[in-house]
Image 1 (spheres, rainbow, N blue to C red):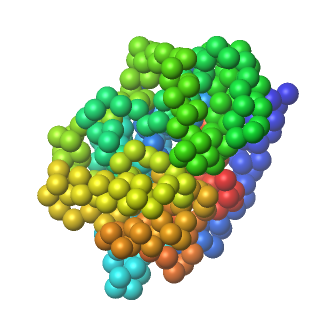
Image 2: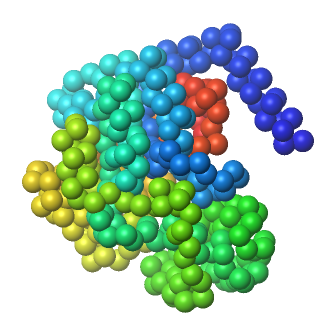
Length: 339
């Protein structure tokens, strides 16, 4: 049944393409900046049906997508967006920004050569506490540990959750689905839960695909990235849910990440991507503090296209996942689908 649904969807998308609806949608939204957010771009062969890979497109997917952007869109840089916001310089029609969150090494080793091939500018937002350390983003590590956790159920925030058997695709998808509820916890509620999971599980990073999926750049690679013309922005120190932090924690996450990058790269950093990026993950208070600390442009992940007049601290982006067929990708970025 699932195969038939997938086939039916592809036939519909093919029909949309044939009658020119993608082209019409691109024309209708031509003056609204499209922001795309990637996380990983992998060259390694990976297991199928593993939700942990959902935010990491393959190199072949990425290249085909970049070719599409070069042919039918106008890739722009963060500097062009800055000029649009601060000086009123119009962006070209069908403007698109390519961005990456977190700072994974595969951005440098796999994605950058493809970006250079198609002459596409981009920005990478880095989580400073991860760079060159061998650490994992807490949410990524939590997911990986929960996938192998031997427990079949647990209580979180007063709600009981049942878990499928460990190390199965069903367990992985269930854990991914729970992350919204986990992110809604305050830092005081989240910490004891994390400590329990860390104490009851082990982390297996031996598969090659995990190494390429999870490994971060070091600072020398970040500097080389910048020398290649890729912009660098801040993504906090530890990738927390900013809206859940106490004021002192919020200031530390925003200020220390900015200062660290500036120290390592020797230049001003005033762009920020809010971790996770949904409207629940940041707030007006977060934006106010970011502005106070010197940030001038903030990027969300609210899965929608921007308005014609950009709001400097709420530049919207759409997350690109590896379960998108090329037809789905074209329809999504053209505006046929909103998610």
